[in-house]
Image (cartoon, rainbow, N blue to C red; front, top):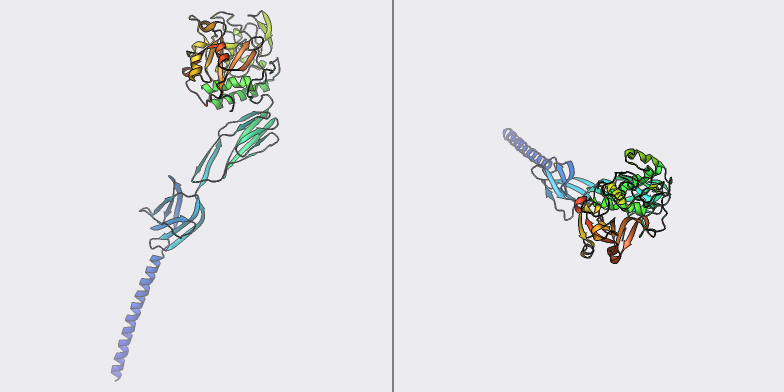
Length: 454
């Protein structure tokens, strides 16, 4: 009996050992299985590429972006353990492993961001009560729904609306800042009484420039403004020439006197004379500091800045220095970066003239066909269609087809540099030819045919 009992006890122990071993194996398997099922997958990188959100994992997994997991459309990682998902502005990132065990939640992630904002307008020069709208480029990734916010650091000089319109208040300088997300850019605004705001039409009561009105510093600043206007329109373009003509007539506060050049004196190929009825240099001729531009070998009674009295040989008198008609067009073209040469306005077969700078087209046809555009020259005058004698430039055409012409005139009712508004009858009474300047300019630039802002 003792033997039997001992055998039973031994058998029981063996069964218990086997059962315990099985249990341990089961528990070990379950543990390993649980560890595998719950194995954590982590994000190692996330970025935006080609309009998609890219999430890189450290193992196989699945990704989803949203505000919650209800109705989630999980994206399975590729062979590189990468999930590629549509771009959204923000949301939570949910990560689960291949067994669909949720491993990680990154809340309130923003996937759209501002890369940069750049004001492209350049420095801003405004007359008192003038205005200008900021032009800018904004670079961003994703969907950015926040606005650009503008501010002025000196609202006593200039304010800015939230649409980017800068308004002059008082003479001085101010910095206008554009903020977009965490990026910003600024532009300096100069408000000055040296220029006047653009008006709908030329002011015939504008005073003539007299001698010594402007200092060298004034001349320097006015040159900066002029160059800025040309640059914004397009240097060495048709629009740049138009900008120069508009500036001299509409923003410069004085009228430039009509002064018949001392060079040609009625001859086709007269002496080249600089600064006496013509000024062959970029900038305004307002101060003796500009004499450094003048070659004294090419003077007759000068040099004298515009507005200062000098002997005018054609009229046998002393008069305020200025420009004649071809001199004013030459000056405009030089400001835009072109060299038309030392040529006059008359049309003769033996003498180069400004009407030869482009193809001559009968003006009535150009007007009626709508082919006249700003920057083209207009030839006319007492010499008739075959002779000309006067040259001007179209600098605006309004919605009613009125033509605005920049010209230097020497008539008692119309004297000096101005912009005159012509209807069809008036235009064809004074001018015969359109000089098509397409080949001369080569490029239009930031061109608009329209007059001022309509």
